[in-house]
Length: 112
Length: 115
Image (cartoon, rainbow over all chains, first blue to last red; front, side, top):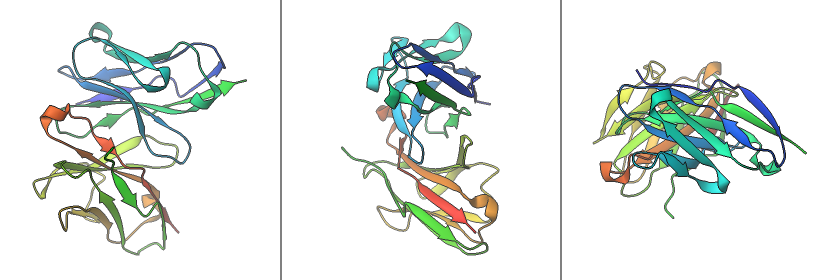
């Protein structure tokens, strides 16, 4: 069965520092992979997605993620974090038209 | 840009009451989903719907839940007799054909509070 693990429940970084949020998945085939961001009380906003091709994908707001099949990972990165990036980040895996499975989320706090 | 809409944004109800959460998916999409997120927890799949029938449901989606596409535009989730533990954010999502890369587009959510 599909599963997604986000090992870090909470991460704190200083504004301007680099960021990496980890995501590992368990899936038999090549999955479709997504990162979503959720601000408090808000809905889910898609940051980026991977379906095939180039394993480094660019998303909105300066985020990128790299699919590493050998490590079953799809880590999210940003070179320089802004205070407005403080939010909850969810990694998700999907297959075809089936349901998406979400990780537990990583809460990002940005220190001034 | 087309988007998924949901109404109401916030629903407060008494335990035991029936609630209907409404969603308008993107107009040319064919697959529809409901997810829920209990406060502080992850997003969980409830049900998927295609060709006017449920295609998959989770263990959460018991007999108290039902879904319907009453017309060509709306997609509803009904909870027959709400329980306190049904309090959550409910997200609707829709998806086009396989050629649309299987991305599900999410609505802004309905926050359900059961008192």
